[in-house]
Amino acid sequence: MNEQIVSIAPASGEELWRGPPGDVDDCLERARRAWPSWAAQSLANRIELTRRFANEVRKEAEALAELVARETGQPLWLARGEVDGVIERVELAVRGYAERSAQRRLDNALQGTSALRHKPHGVVVVLGPASSPLAVPASHLIPALIAGNAVILKPSEKVPASAEVLVRCLHRAGVPANAVQVCPGGPDTGLALALHEGVDAVLFTGSSHNGIALNRKLAATPNKLVALEMGGNNAIVAWDTPKLADAAALIVQSAFTWSGQSCANARRLIVRDSLFDDLVGEVKRLADRLIVGGPLDDPAPFMGPVIDNATAEGLTESFVYLLSNGGRPIKHMVRTVPGRPFLSPAIIETTGMAERPDVELLGPLLQVIRVPDFDTAIAEANATRYGLVSALIGGSPQDYNRFWANVRTGVVNWNRPTTAVAPGAPFGGTGLSGNHRPGGFYAADFCAYPVASAELEQPRATIGLGLAEG
Image (cartoon, rainbow, N blue to C red; front, top):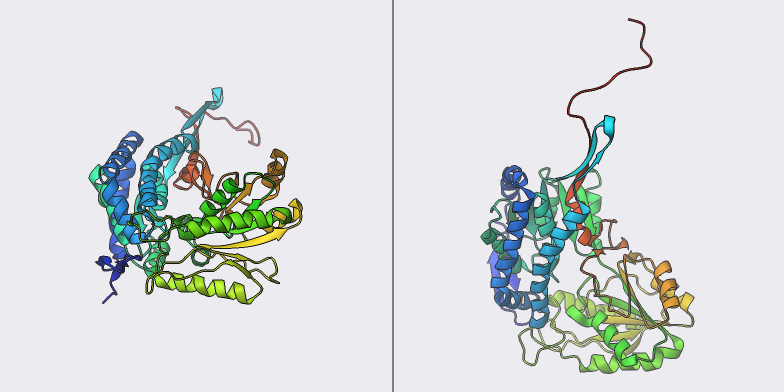
């Protein structure tokens, strides 16, 4: 018998959801049956149903936010923002499809007409992360449905309850039950879905380790589209600014929102020598004031727990490793609640380390590096195999122009946190952060493929050369 999937609230240890893994073959069979009729519906009808979905989410907004908060451990105020993000993604997806996948025609006189249209891939599998069980899957689900695909969502095994409610809202909005399904399970279920011959596209969000492994498995199937949104060893460069309090707030938001578990969180802070003591001192003072607590606590915490005890143990071991290999502690990482995965925010200077590990540490752990000049700062920001997000705090417009031109990331911010994403822009990275298929506003690009046509209403052709006399 297959082992049950169990969702445990990280803050309390309460069981929130239990059920068997989904039946991969059954889900795929039903999706393939549903796809032709769903794709045959008009684009206007598919858009209307996704707008009704937004209304269904609005009706359940507070209950859904509370469920997300309990299942992920993130504070309720942050979970409410995630629910709002799902609603906002509907109109963004509608606009994105209209802009990125629009139908176009060009009259070529005697040569007839050339046309550009887009077709859905067929059956799409969405593999979602634990840190954002609603907004990230919705950013793929909604564009894929608008394009006319049937979709199967395989959420992280840690957040099946949130995914189930998300798909239920789609069903209540009128999207056919077999056109969008949730298939709970662990890594084996996700891999079985991705490799199944009945799947036409795989949209993955998660760690680079898992994304690379998935990409290797799918290397021999070029007929299957693969979009990878992976993590980052994201850097903030802090340069000349008199506004230390504002800079410190941006750094703390970048590093410790979502308890550091978002792919967009800052992992490294690169600071000019002359600014180091004052700015890092301000960052530490602010981090010392952050409330770490349960998602529904009053007063509201800034940070909740990380997703589980194994994650907390791995992060504390990483802090000890950095400490043992030349790191200088600025703020220690502490397990604040026995038996539960609550961690205090941690800051450690790693300037003196002979080799800094180039890994994505998904948690509230910020490494600080001091540099003498701006060229060294940019080189240090680029000293990673990842390339998701970077940010410059302070500096002049000329500094930002140099930074933007030379830093290798898919998102580059100035005096904004690394977690700030423009709503009408793509989101994705280079290197180990993605495979050049950015999501966000550009998600339509991997939810439908372009079809070019040369068209005449009647056949008309002659062969003027190369014919023998008749």
